[in-house]
Image (cartoon, rainbow, N blue to C red; front, side, top):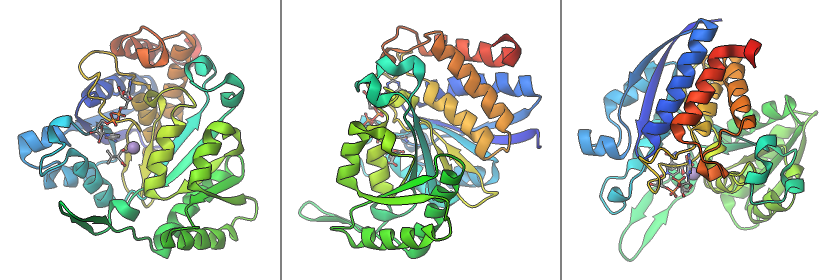
Length: 355
Ligand code: NAD
Ligand code: IPM
Ligand code: MN
């Protein structure tokens, strides 16, 4: 097991710096507890990078990312740039493409301490455990674009290879959990979806122990709130995965709980970031829920740094803090970002013995 790592911090915009500060505090406590050394480098991405460096992500930052062991990212986006020629979000898309992180894992699990935070009934949410595997470097996000005042288009392209590699990630994940994959597409309308469905069906032949079903995306959106327990692993294209994961965030009760891991080929650095955005409406108010970013840091130890022990230590600290009702306003609580951070940091530093 390695015990020394280079981590690139990209706090970004809005609540990004607040939640990255929280995650860093917890990572430092975990590193100390487990005898791991983390060397940080911090750089700009998003609106702040446009303002200070003229681009949403610089070439130097892309190089630093590729040279790191993992990237911990806050969020990008600010209303100031909504009509400008340069968009903060372009920095994130460029980074994903540059690192080739084609598989985006977004776990969605019901949390016992939060059952009343969800707008859905307790009996619907209790026991939910879904892994959304979102394709992240293809589809309409990256196809050729045309943008005019009278006409605009976003081309959506998928190749067999792109579908196959993300599908394998989903099936391999399913083998280690509930053994079921649901592929979500729009094959009744879209050509890319018909290719998607055919490739997923082919790949399934290599995984005889995993059950596969296909669901159209509109129906999948309904089932996520009607009977979310019917899902184990969901695999889907870039745009559908973006939308369904925000919807699924309401199962645990808040966008502030959903972590993510964006992974490429083995041995290349992953990007770890919360699913939520820069939340300009609450930025700078010490109200942001830091759990999604803290859990993304745990995921970084598991998926990119090969230290599941450190990941589990962080996850344990989060569970204890949630059980002790360290809840920010989005979860119906009154704790500040700093109070939650301090509590998780303390429990992670104390380790299993005290917990
Ligand atoms: P958002 O996720 O930022 O916010 C949606 C709602 O959820 C807001 O009411 C916000 O206050 C709340 N929320 C989000 N995260 C929270 C947290 N940690 N704690 C408490 N409440 C939280 O989505 P939006 O408002 O549609 O987008 C705002 C900006 O963020 C846009 O510029 C968008 O492009 C960007 N964005 C970035 C990312 C990313 O960096 N990965 C993801 C989504 C959106
Ligand atoms: C996400 C975000 C991004 C996406 C935006 C900010 C480009 O919504 O990570 O879910 O659409 O992928
Ligand atoms: Mn999104």
